[in-house]
Length: 431
Image 1: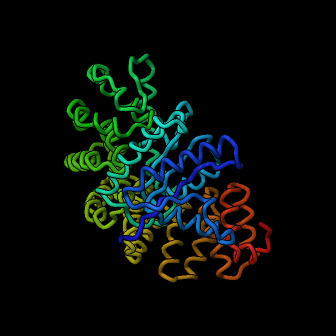
Image 2: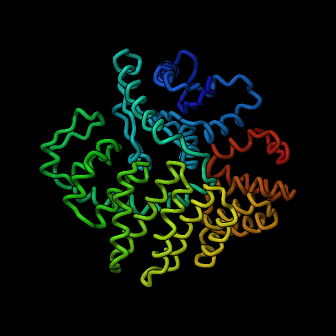
């Protein structure tokens, strides 16, 4: 019999007999019912028996499980922290939230299952079917590989331009009243609204986090818009969620843009390439991404209109693909080019340190850590890496100072790090 795949459930749990626990238990039952036919073992944190290694197991499950179910109901900080760790790895996940609650902006573009009274049989059965629909897609495309190991801030920076453009489109499109139902269920869709205002209907679907509906609108949107920055942005949002037809649309547009580049096209080119790279990261196929994106990125960085800052960001996209493919020497060669173009971006220096670590270049790893620790835009992942690097170098005071900085800006990140007993003992800090 084939080994079971693992699904880790990231959710609020609450105290025994609390309403939060009852809802969490109902969602756990739904998850097990939905995934049984796909040969999954469903795990929630309170079911891990060996309490002394719980945190190490949690981290491993977040990063390596074939699937994570992420319950955003209640906006629990620990859930969002663990969700961020999962997003960073680029492996499959399914978001759920109780209907009526507001999705935070930074995850609003991600497909999310909205459930009602999950403890009722009819609502539970509906969610079981929705989860199975998601998983069938993953069964066809595969569950990806382990994460890139690259800072989430690097990915976020490249997609930020896409999100800002969508925000601008939304503010314009939604400034006038729309007669459009933007609910998550596909049977709410009114085709008359789309015929009247396809752009607005598409944007509303994105704003609602209903990627499935937005994807169904894309072919008609392509017919209406034709080659345009607006279409790059629209298709790019879907491509970055792992939707292949949208990625192909963006790729075709990139080829067209390079035939005759105008200054106003630079933003669209960067946004398009970023979304294509993100597609290959999300789908766990970095090798194919390298083959597909290398020539595009080479053409882009050779454009006379593009600044060194944008060149660095684009080359870093290629570096991420090489890292994901475990071709660390190639990743190192590219990140050195990136740092020549823009040495002041802490995410790039952090990426270099992570690559040095993979290549066993401990002194270089330490030098990169020291460089980004002097910068002002340090992220929690940078500080966590710094703590571990300083401990390897037996620089305990520096490790402790980096940990205290981490605890100040990310208490949850510090708590996760401190639960690793060997780190706690070396830092001489109580859990």
